[in-house]
Length: 206
Figure 1 (tube, rainbow, N blue to C red):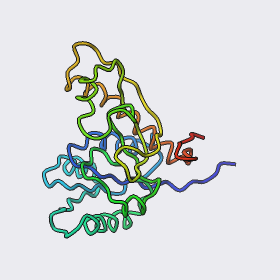
Figure 2 (cartoon, one colour):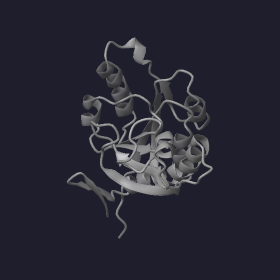
Figure 3 (cartoon, rainbow, N blue to C red):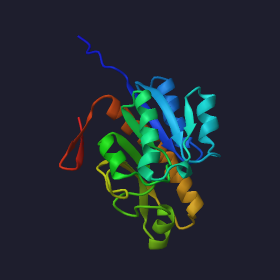
């Protein structure tokens, strides 16, 4: 007998173009990921993700951090929006603000980030540039749960990308991005199927 499973609601934090957001949202629309989209929140009034989301008829909101006295106040407004949507999982797709302990604690083990390196190598910003400067031969991307550190949360899965002699920061970023699309979608799919379990800060796929 098939077991009925309520579709999880996926919401997004995005600061920029929303390419990764739209990739995941399209897979949800196509039923490749059995979930529902909640809403999109951005901290950037001119973010292209606002246009992308509205074209897909997904609620999208600009929440201006400058209007609030503290990061926690700003995040409380975001939490309120996510809760109204019934959010089960948050995907940070190019969100450039560091989340507070308060926010991370509220959504413990329910925030997935995609990072353009093979963590723990090259955390933070400019990861592709750092990979080229260090002369690594292989880099890639990592999907991980967010914790209180900078790109230190439990790793869900990774994809490797070869670094070629002629690669520039732009070309390497483009190659990694293609893998990011697949990696984040697969990670979200596994979460929605209840197949991810965190044991001693390591993620097991069931």
